[in-house]
Image 1: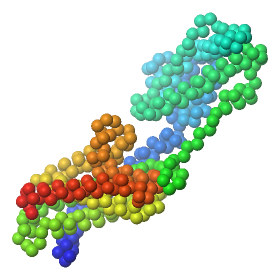
Image 2: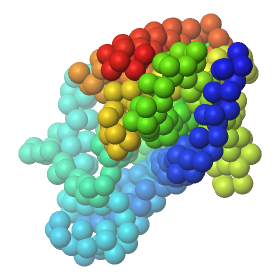
Image 3: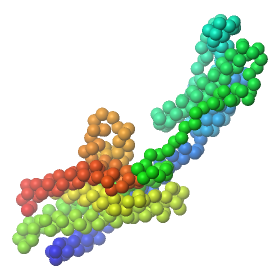
Image 4: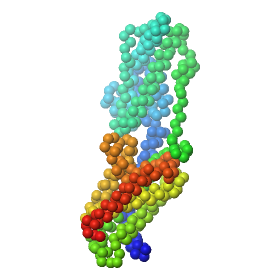
Length: 425
């Protein structure tokens, strides 16, 4: 025990001298968490609260096109502005650039007349199917399509939401006009506005409830998503200090000298693991504390810790152990400090990408979706998400801890075989 304690003290002193490594392990992840969370929070605000600027050029002078514009404004996701003089794609692009708008819509000049004719034609066919006399319009034709222009920076999912919203407004206008025509054909008088609103707004309500294991209904936010994810990234970035430390000891002959002393390599490896697992626990504590106390002062949502603190501690401990094992493994096989740092940094980014830290695992397709289970960060992230987002307990994260523990044991075995192969033990 004395040998182990002395070695731990030695590793702590070496770590304390590595100012660059400490900066990479603490300052860089802290900046990363703040920046990424702020950016994603802004994205959530754009989708959920702020409205997308939308320019509408109405070339039609009828009443129906005005109703369409009102219905688009009622959707709640657009800030509608009217423009005139837009003739083609170039002029719309210039108008969008001038108004700093993300979307543009052109309503064709014959929109109202075409919709009215089509609605009257459909009402006439409906009357005929009832065995009644109805008016039909010959050569009614289809309504000329609306043209939607969008800024290329809009993501595909957001474009689909925009198209769906405008399509629902268009369908509401067409249905209302068809209803008016049918009512007039039967009663030979205009459809009362109150009855029209009652018939068109007769919609079934939808309740949206986030599913959680603890029965709570707290809506997850950008902080709950990002803080656990980038805490894992910070843990694995101990490779920048630990990997280089292992390489330096190999090059300096420390492992060879240990063979001449009444001790063995296990003490040195165990010491490094204890020291840097302590570092990973401190990283998690610092980043979680920022989420709890600092983020609210920055206009971000506060981090809500899981109710099961034991589960949080165990998951953090196992994640830290896996990160430390991976760092030592890279250090054992690297011949120079530059190799350890270069390969370590690139491999961590790749593991983070495949593991779902940068792109959600459910959005991946094919090979990458299957390969996610090979990344230890994937199991770390899933365990944290169950605790932070779903309100899970220790029993709920066992299925994630076990694969992570197996990966760690495999890394430990690879470390032993690597040291044996290099005759360092």
